[in-house]
Image (cartoon, rainbow over the protein chains, first blue to last red):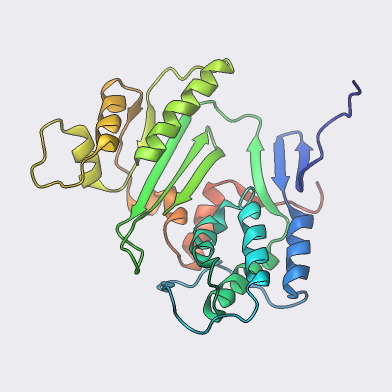
Length: 169
Length: 107
């Protein structure tokens, strides 16, 4: 068996080894996604989702071709590996995979505009972090406008580093 | 809260297997006082519906001191980012907490 040295790339994740820790991002993946959406050289926004907007089922017109929506959302789901900040909105838009509408596609475009503002962003795992597990959990009480289901979110830190999180309806 | 709880139990097992046993109970921060009280109080809550296995499993892990349930103010609740849309300032603040950083050009 051959030693290939330090890990630099794995399934689209890019690893950067530094003296004070390891940094993981998906820079190239984000750029490919922006190209797929056809949104190169456009503006960027500060947050991935508008506040006080709830996406309801069967609102607006159906998309003629659902495949682009499905591909974009599929890519975004993989992107949450290093971008936990978009997991909530990705969870929201992925609920409409079977019948995508124009309104939801606009939300997906906004996420991509948000990513455009910080394509090199990623998770940092500092070396000097403690090994104490700390967890946070939160729920929006029956936030879904269609079925009144709740969305639960939790995240766990080992010292300062985020190691596990989930956003689930 | 129950999924988080089972994940904690799993992660503690994994960390112990890797040689980093957790000596103290893991704090699971929540900003819902009622949820904390229902989990902490063993008395049957007559007015609480939908108590299922989930709740009892949380109580069990709490009693065996695997987890603790400290209350956290909503301002510092990091898990907010996974359950709601928020303003720019709050979003930036929470991103910092998650150690989500931009790769500086120099490194």
